[in-house]
Image (cartoon, rainbow, N blue to C red; front, top):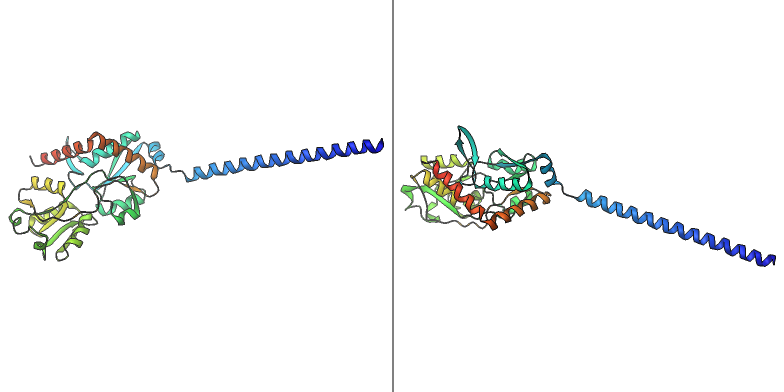
Length: 290
């Protein structure tokens, strides 16, 4: 009987130890799983992009531009005050509205726009900018919002003689420094003398004064200047622009902001609003000459 009772007690103790061991193992597994889930959650949060949230928190979208490129962006006097307008501005206002924030425009030279963006002095850059390969290495770009051809402006009296790319050999070609037009001139007019200036109005002034023989700008811009200055004309010579239109520059890694901007561009394109903005901007350019 004593032996029998001893066996029962031993079996009970053994079962108790096994049960405790399993309970401890289950608790340990549960803790490890919880810790693993917590770490995964923290990892996702650390990798999150708050670029859009930051702009909405401060209530302001800062757009850097060089307002010397009508009809994209240019200056007018309204109620005695200088104002930056253009279809880039109209698009940016819609982007800001969709974010629920105000738009603030920061003016600077064209070749300083992307450095300012990467130095966090602006949230976006809009300046009729083309997303070429070199720029795309430095910043994000939105979807293309506008496609335009390039035009070669000459004096009206030279329109008939400067009508092919070959006719510009040895001639001085004005382009904006750091622009896609500068690259086009160097690649497609190798026998010409390239004159790179910071501001487009200075290029137009040089052309009007006869200090340069031609200027390469986007066709809508060229049309605007020809309307403003009848002594200028657009050459029949054509350059190729394979860079793919204008897009909005955004700092690398700001993917949430990029997605938000693309959603507004898509909406505006579907509504036909961008074409409307271009027409309105050109009307403002025409008003400068009246």
